[in-house]
Length: 412
Image 1 (cartoon, one colour):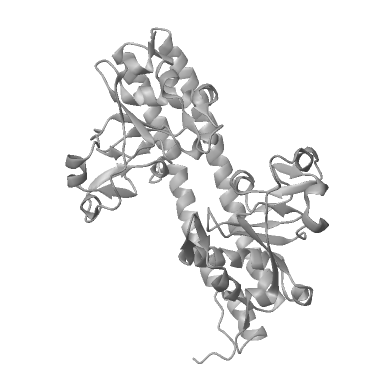
Image 2 (cartoon, rainbow, N blue to C red; image 1 turned 135 degrees about the horizontal axis):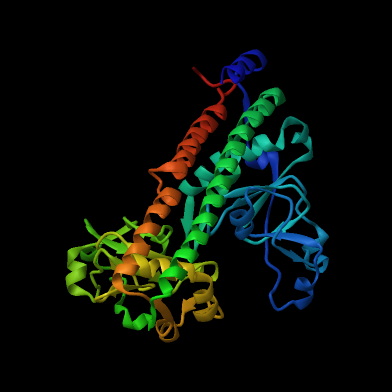
């Protein structure tokens, strides 16, 4: 920080100039060629970016998972290399620096530096500053049929223009943070692979003393509902956890983002799902990518896209959740339908699926061993995940400090 402070004092003692986004950048929206246009999708010439590219491959990209034909490019004009894609609808709060000529889908707005400002910026400085733009976007949205960014305010968002020497020193420091986090993430991924291998070995050993049992026979299955959102008695001052697909991002559910009231539980068909159940997402477009399965660590209710197994006698829920996660790809391939507007599990066929069920002591032994290993790999309060969380928090703190500049002409 002292090096940056010294540079700012030396090179811009009176502060730095800020300019609106629309002054610095040409902006264009992405688009999706018609899916019925076979020619548009038959070529392999033009990288076409979606949110899935960022999720799978990070924020600095030189290729995309899908490509389109040159014939699908409107007016023959691509987005320039070294442009920044900012998500301005749907999944807001994400951006990426694209190093090659490209296009994107309609969820992104492309920012390309105007020629007169190219010599003023290191593009990676702007890439890092766009984390601040992401935060602004998340706080300035409008909602019609789906959430989108206030584009009038978006074009007024201001970027600082510090001297290039300052920009490059900031990029050098933030690159070091990014590299360290990437190394920690790679180490964690290796641990996860090790865990997955260990789980398969342990479950295969347990299966030697098992009988095949259909999922529908493991206990009682219950579904969820969404109480009327027009009835404030169901939502105001709520205290009962209400589990939805967006809460299913961990192997164990210990909290929910939404609550319902006890009145809603009494007056609707909501089921109380006790601690020690197994929850599964049965309807959501997340099923196109994964089948979320979680052990329920608190008492909850469910929304209409969820189902839960309340284990019967002789069934350990941790063991069942581990088996289902180990078979996730098989289950999704066999039982998830993706041909509608919303992906969904075919309930009847899914519940007829058989898993190996050994005697309860064997289930519990396997569950205990896997739980200990999973804690080492995935617990945010312990080990490598805690180290990554701490580093990320430190990185965000320093990034915020490094990207804060006094404005030229502003009163003290």
